[in-house]
Image 1 (tube, rainbow, N blue to C red):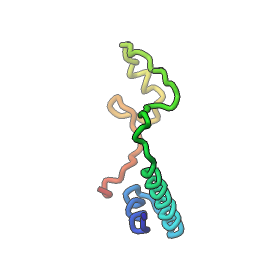
Image 2: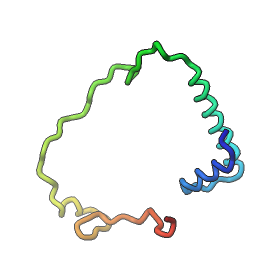
Image 3: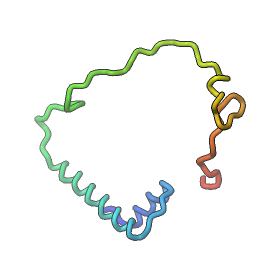
Length: 98
């Protein structure tokens, strides 16, 4: 069973703020999922042939083709902000939370 302390720990790792109701709800839901997985372990699969896919799959990737690069001035022409021939984007990580 996943207890509420573990849910809070995982939420903290993911930088999620959960209410106490959410912590209780997720604790129950995660525990139910693990219980179901344990039930699946009871199935006898010794004579079942392993498969990668349940339906036939065809490779849809194209071959790599070497081409000339795009002109850097054209690429950055409509960039809202740029620095040293690169796109400049807002920070998403806070250095204090290491």
